[in-house]
Structure formats: C-alpha cells, structure tokens
Image 1 (cartoon, rainbow, N blue to C red):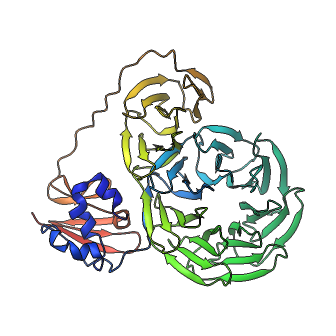
Image 2 (cartoon, helix red, strand yellow):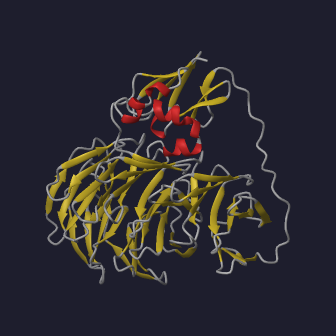
Image 3 (cartoon, helix red, strand yellow):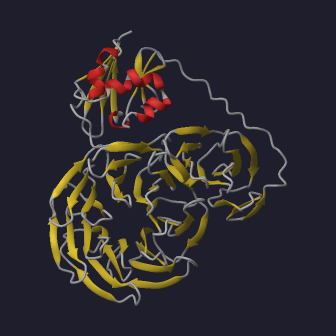
Length: 535
C-alpha cells in the first residue's frame, strides 16, 4: 500500500524506488534485495520497520487546513489554502472532486450526518453548502463580517453552526440556509464550534482561552470552561455526548465533563500548539493534531497516549476519524492528506500531484472519479478507489478556480482566472469547448439533463454550443540536464534528464545539494539521506 502510487504510475520503479525506500527489515526488502539496482544506492540505511503511515494523499497546492470523513465512511473531504476543497475516496485515496468557489483560504469542512451535504468555511467570510455526491454548490451563506474559521452540522443534519473572526457564532437552517441565531459572548476570535451528538448543545472555542457551552435550541450560554493558558483552537464532543475535548496553543488537550463542565484530564505530550482534536465514533479514542508535525492517539477514558503518528513534514492542521472508527485522516501544511489505519497507525494513502494550491475538488456522480482544480493552471482526474491520477487536463493559462461534473458523469466543466470555462470529456480528457465568460467564475454546477451550466453570473446553454477548436495540449520543450539531479517537482532523482528513482512523499527534499553522481537530501521531518547514481 505504501508504494502503491509509485508502482501503479511507474511499474519499473517496483525494483528501484519500492525496494530502496522499503525498511531494511521488511519482508519485501529481504526477499528481493538481489533485485536492487546496482547503479543506485541510498545511505544511511533507512528505517528498520514500516512507519504507521498507510497512504499520503497529495494534490493540494497549498496548506491543507482541515479534513473530515463522510459519516458513511466512503469519502474524505480536505480544505486547503489554495481556496479549494477536495473530495477523496476513503478506500483507495483517489481524488473524486475538486470544489471551487471560495475566493480565499478554506479553513474548515464538515459533512452532514446523513452524508448528503458538505459545508466549507472560508476566509472570504462565507460558508458554502455543497452536494456531497455532485459537488454542486447549493448555498452560499453570507452574514459574518470577518473570516469564518469553523463549521459543524448538528447530528440530526437540520442545523449548521459557523464560527468567525467577528467573535460570533451563527446558527443556520441546513436546508434553506437561513440564519437562525447569532451567539455573542466571546471577547476574541471564535476558532471552532461543535455540536453534541444528541444535538442539544453547542461548544465554541475562542482565542480568549475559554470554551463556551450553549443550548442549541435557545442559544443560551450554559457554561464557560476556563483552564487553558493560551488560544483554544478546536473542540470536539465524544459521540456519546458525555465528554468534550479542547485543543490549545498551550500545547495541551483538555477533557471536560459535558454536563458539569468539570475538567477531567489534561493531556500533555505535544511540543507545539495543538490545532485539532477528534473522537473516534466508538468514543474510545481521541486523536490530536499538532504543529509539532505529529498526530497523537489517546485513550479517551484514561487520557493515556496510545500512539504518536509521524510522517508529515510540516504542521498538522486537522484530524478526522472515519465513521467505522477504522481510519484516521490528517491534513498538513506540507500540502498532503494522509490516511492512517486507526488501530495500527500505518499510513494507507497520500494524495498528491498538483504543484501548487488545490482550489477545488468535485466527485463524479457515480463516485468513481474525483477532479481537482489547482493554482498550477491544471485539472487532475483521480480514480476514487485506487487514488491513482488518471489524467492531467491542461489548457487554462491561469489559476483554475472551480470544477463540476455533469450528473451523468460524462463531462467536466472547469472555470479559471483566465476568464474562460472549459468543457472536458470526462473519459478521454479532451477539451470539447472553451467559453470566454469575461471574468473569473467560482460556482459551477450542471442541471440534471446536462444541457445547462449554472454559474454565479447566469445559466449557460450548453446544448446550443457550437463545437469550438480543440486546445493544443503540446508540452513546452524540456531543458537538457547533465549528470545526477532532481526533477523540477522534486519527485524524481534523475540522471542526464532521465527519471531514475521515484521519491516517496516522506523523503522528498525541502533542501538538497548535488555533487557529481551524488545528491544530498534534507527532509522537513529532520531526515537526511544521500543517493548515488553511478552509471
């Protein structure tokens, strides 16, 4: 599973990257050591055993700020600083959709508990409601006067809460998008909100170092929980609604009694700010994400630390359990999403591929593909089962802001900062039409028949379009390289411009040096390794 991306994309790397980057004590390394390429060597020796990481999900072109599993455990959503949300197949790690429409950093995502809707919060001061299957934008909720930091659905899926830098919490009707209540009381930014699973209470975390508990029906404040010595970044209820966890900039996690407000445990162990907490759905475990680049798994009853999950090379912003409690997803500033086995801590998938921010994700309606739009001017199509990148669609000359599939899953529309909308054949990746819309569009969705495309400036009649010229997708000339070095994206060790060794995401250079036949690599995690290519 760890080398799935390399083997599927580059089968010949089975006896190069997959062997050289496998632990020295692993069965595959021992059985096939004689197949290792003689011309390529890595030193010092890598780890003895497999890490806990099952998969690393790559594709966003900027910071991944938040992750959430759908409640049927089939999908994972990720929010990014590239202004997009990506939808991933939770089993295969394939990217299903890239949701575009926000104009700034997307800070939080949450699925409704019936798994039909996805909400996203953004620094553009809005909340967007999306169809979880289609990726279509259903509502744009406006009313906050500053950035929106967090969103949460009530467990009966009837209400949505949003937390904002304007020091308020807003309660919305999840069907109509109408604002029901504005909750005031915090003296600083409200960073996170969470409903209890019986939908009777709402908790809010604030930079005023407190947590407030609210009555979800009346909006009355029930408790103010004090004890943290710095910003409170995140709150989460256990699924039996008896406990509340809070994560703080003071590097600790606190566990509270949800009825009385009493502090039950203070969990210490992280060496930097704790950005996010999440309970497993059986309420037995708590996961915490930290700026120390790790995820910790805690026993929810005793507060004991069960595991420390390592693999990200930068801040970890968010964690989420799958609803069967078997998987954990983490989002990081290293622009990747990692999927972990919640029992063993093994990494299942890493979703990557774009070279810059990912601005939007969208699932095809048959759930077999995910499209991602990026700041790198491309759209990528991913297989939702395997996590494999199927196609890279090129043709836009600027940031791609939004993507949407037709309901029969045969076409894909993409909007760009180049003021065009492109229509693609979803199977072949061929560009069918290019429309000059005269401005940047962020909201795209097809009608049920596929004959119309809905946008924020009007409805486009697709049926009457005349066939336009196909885009020239020829790549520009590539430079000639001599000796040993790296590909420009840092994914390959090259020799004379030829790809020799695919580098797993955990080993990719944050800093590097080249000397003759050797390359030296420094990784964000602190690891240093040297590779020699002697042909």
